[in-house]
Length: 162
Image (cartoon, rainbow, N blue to C red; front, side, top):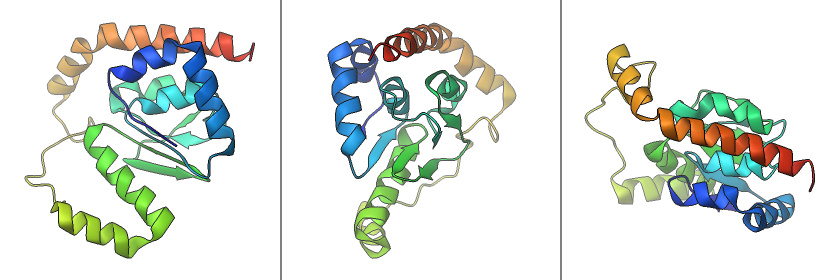
């Protein structure tokens, strides 16, 4: 199972039927995976409790609200859970899924076919970016961050009733 991040999954996280379906499928899935803030939906469905996980850097500190262990890496593999950071880390996560499911040689062939060799290497994470730039991005994301935090609190309370 793969859960993407982005705008669509925000509504999905608020939908009880979707959360129940994700929880049901994830309970028996061989692999439970997500990119970007899709990890928050997995967590809201109860599928990251006690697992190391990643999400977009601006939302990493929300992972404990769903019982996950935030891990500041582009791709995190913990047992049968594979999660990744923001959009471009999703490519890394996809290649990791391929590596885990069908092997490194296939993942390398896909990377080559995609010409996946990011250039130029720009600071794309708070640990390497200018502090003022990071602060500006965080400021622009405040409303969405607060919305997600409230949403995950609600989901946590609802999960106790499932």
